[in-house]
Length: 292
Image (spheres, rainbow, N blue to C red):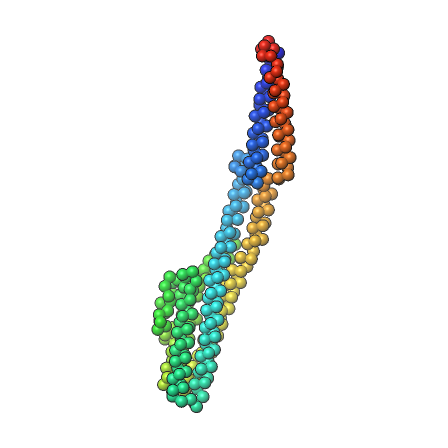
């Protein structure tokens, strides 16, 4: 056999190696679901996939942050709803206490009810979610109100910012909504309780206007919370669609066409079998013929 025959053996070996390498790559593609698994596979596609993966991570974080924000704002909104109910109860009591026909003991009983309402409001103002106080401004680690209604929170507030740039305020300056033991709703409730206990019906009547103003203040705060909750809901609701779009983009960029890869694998296996068969036939040629 001539030198050309030796070249045939060399070429056969190279073909076998190439076929095995191709089969290994196809198996990796099928296992990972991606045609591009490292920069050398396709530098441009790999870089694009890194960007898309980062975007996927960002919207996953958006979902977790949005769900937490939703729960936080819903808790705050529920607390404000309870306060609104408490103010309406106080209005009914003040109306009853200002009519001039109640006994001293009846007035004092109403005063005790208002004192309970004041403590209820202070409790709502100390609402928290996940260990974070909701009505202390940016002071979220400690209760903003003492049992006596003194405020130790802040006028500043915290917010979260999502990957699309949407910023959502997550807590409230309680002083602006509830006041404290000298101003606003809490002070009004304290004054009303004292007026009822002392039988001062003119002071009781004066509290009605203040309570109406406090109710409007709480309603405004409720509206602000609602707007922030709507923004958080929008982010959370958009995440599934964004995720689907990004996943489709990733698949188009680096994803494996399973049917095509399977066909290529079958073709490679057939080629490998043919090369092995050819090698077996060539092995039957006497070595002396090859070296001749």
